[in-house]
Amino acid sequence: MASLPDLPAVTRLSNYVTRILGQNPGKFTLQGTNSYLIHHPSSPRLLLLDTTGPSSVSPLSASSVQSYTTHLRSALAAHPAQPARVTDVVLSHWHGDHVMALGEVLRALHDATSAAPDAVRVWKMACAGGGTDAWKGEEGKEGEIEGSLDEAAKEGLLEVDEQGRRVRPLASGQRFVLPGEGEAHADASVEIEVVHTPGHTSDSICLVLRTSAASSPSPAIDANESPLGVFTADTVLGHGTAVFHSLSAYLSSLTALFDLFPPSGPGSSALVPLYPGHGDVVPDGRAKIEEYRTHRMERERQVVEALQAGTAGESAELSASELTDRIYASTIPDSLKPAATHGLLLHLAKLQEEGRVERVSRRSVQEEGEREKQMGEIQLPAGWDDGWKWIEGREGAGGRL
Image 1 (tube, rainbow, N blue to C red):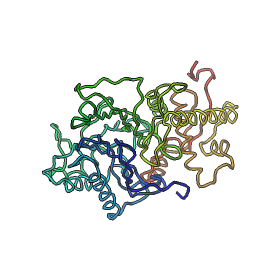
Image 2: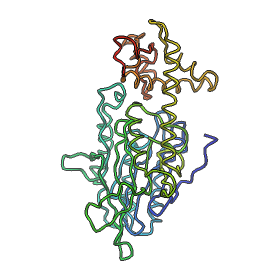
Image 3: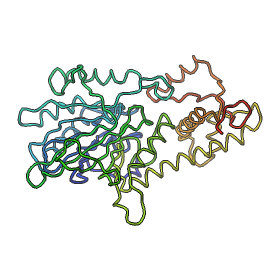
Image 4: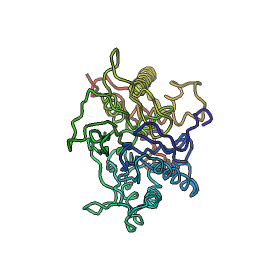
């Protein structure tokens, strides 16, 4: 934490974006969770991306929540078009440090509006609902978030949809439009497009910020035009690398994000920033996403080479911790090796999906359950204590051509 730059509680990043720090710094949240007000300077209607809350290892005090809501209200009061109000809250994914303070935030938004306030709409992409090892820790999360909003719904602080849901389902490609108001801005609006980017979680999304003509109810998007910015939540961070639970899904999501940017080179547009869920703004979003992709592919190459060298015999196998020792050696302290092993297991899971490695079970189902209890809310990848063998190219292995 000492090496991270200090971030102000409230920062107006552009005419369209204001960042409010979640007041929940920690090992996994860095300086704190970033929530963002997205706005048109001439419109009093704003969209809020994410709130704040405790992480899996760091509680959040009532005073911290109050501090956050105070800063949120001050940001609304400073908006040039008044009376400013949040009409929609978009949740980037289900993790507690982004959603757990939602009830308190809805109350603060209600109290901050002098006129009779409209109920706020809350949106989130649906979780995959378990079914695979990568997403098994997400079962029941939709219900938990819905249940946490009982009081807010009773008090009319949020708008329940036609099916009685407090949290409305998002769809990839869905757009929110904040039109400009007044003669000077009547021909322009801010448009926010949802992009589904699973990997960190199954419901992870990013938002793409653009300007568009307000004359059309469904403005056309020029795919060759640079966005004003991309909100990446926990898919791409401002510092370090992101945690993910499905590497194959994560790499596909990074590619989808990379494709949002026009080609670089002579005559290319200005740099497009990333607004991450944790950490500072990333000025060159295209370069950062390419850095993330390159880092993951280089790590996969190291895993493949270590397995090929270590499992040359037909019965040879390596555990994930043994792979960690071979790949990292003494380059990281022992305290970081569990996190490194966690990352390598996700690479192994991807290679297993592709038919290139075989997992050899060493623990019983009961032992796996006991280990998961010890890990608490931290999702344990499958195969932590198992052996792994390189099988691509062997007869009958079913490897790729």
